[in-house]
Image (cartoon, rainbow, N blue to C red; front, side, top):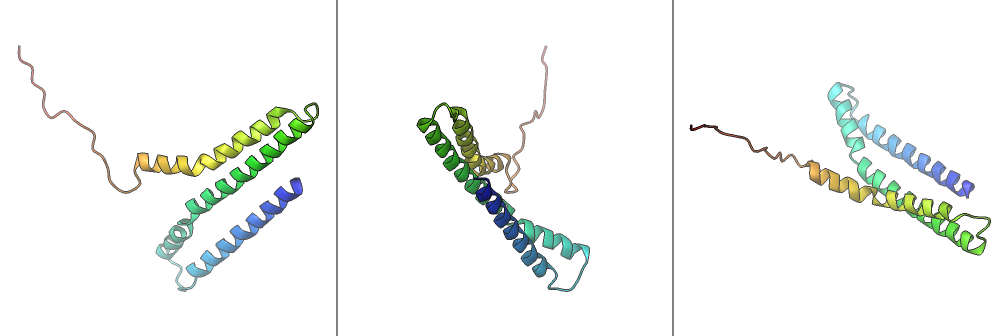
Length: 130
């Protein structure tokens, strides 16, 4: 199991390195190195970050769910050797990772990232009559 996880992490690191090198090559293609070009390169390179994080959350959530099912299967076959909590913890962690993109999208829609700002209601005038 650990070899599979270690190999997947190495592949993920290689993919992140390749993405970084491609975006760095695009940023340096113009030949100018002022603050505006650096800021533009940072914004361009981080624009795909939410998709990458969502993909990673889905991938690792699915991996943990499968590992949780396998641990529960081990518990059914030999209850004295494998406790049920190991499989349940993996299933809960996998479900949590699988829900991260949905929750983050809901948070962004609640806070409002589209530039529309809602105004708070205020008190225009106050008079007392006695």
